[in-house]
Length: 108
Image (tube, rainbow, N blue to C red; front, side, top):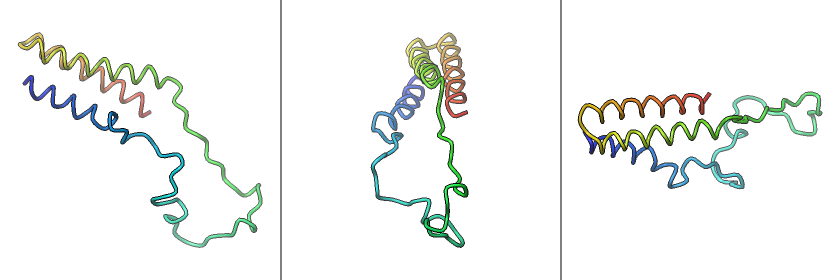
């Protein structure tokens, strides 16, 4: 049980530690929205500013609190794995609930 909980926590932390979740801002490689579009395309010279649709930027207002909930939840899961027994299982379940709560509000 302890090994399973610690392995789960390590797998949860691995993508963020490797920078896999960070978007590449100055990357010209890879697929683009233009390449994914299907249908007719207008040249930019034929489209004026009134016909363009501007996408609103997504801003996480409370992202720090949500990330903190996820980190504390994972920490509680690790602590529960180290405690062991029935009390450790309860701490693991509580930590998983807290981490999932933070993840839900982070992705919302």
